[in-house]
Image (cartoon, rainbow over all chains, first blue to last red; front, side, top):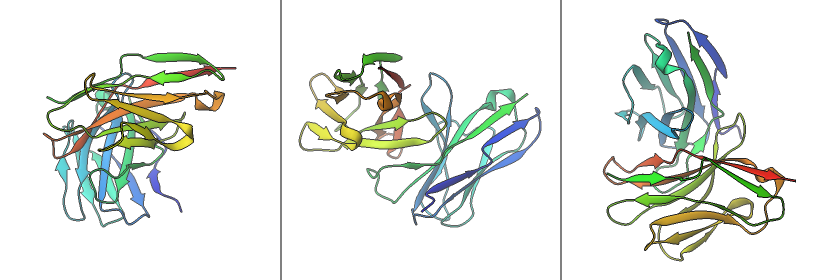
Length: 113
Length: 114
C-alpha cells in the first residue's frame, strides 16, 4: 500500500520556468490537498479538492494552478516560477470526513533561482 | 479569526524524562484539535485528535494530549521520552470560517538527548 506518492522529490527551476508537481493516492480518498511548508510558518494550504471534479483556493493560491485529474491524482502547476515559491510542497489526502486524519506524501523540495 | 500557537520553537528533554509540547488555540465555537509529527525528509503523520468527550486523548507511539478549555490549550505529552521521538511536532485546529480546513501552528522541534 503506497499511500500518497509525490513526484519529483527534488526540483531546481530558474525564475520564469514552469513545472507540474504530481500527486497520486491509492486509498480511494475523496479529498486531496496541496500545502507548502516554509521554516517557522507551519503548513499553508495552496489548493484543495473536496471531491473529484471540484477544486478550491486555500490560503496562498497565487502563482499556482491545480488539476484533479481523477479520484487518484491531483497535480499542482507553477506557470512562471518565482524565488518566493522556493519551498517544500506536500500533497495530502483524507477519506471525506472533516475530522478524519490527513495522509501526507513525502514532499517535493523545490528551489527557484 | 481562528488561530493556533506553539510558543516554543524547540524543546529539549533527556531520554526517559516526561515531555510536553505546548499548543494554544483561539476559535469561535467548539475546537477540533490535532497533533501531527514530522520526521526528517518525510511527510507529516497523524498522532491524535480531540473532537469531543474525554479531555485526555491517547494517540500513537505512547503520546497523549490534554484538552483544557479554560486555558484554551491542547498540550502534547509523553510520560517517558525516547530518542526516536526526536522530530518536528505540529498542532492544528479546524477553521470553521474557511470551510473546515486546518490552521497549523509553526511547529516545535523536539530533541531527546540520550
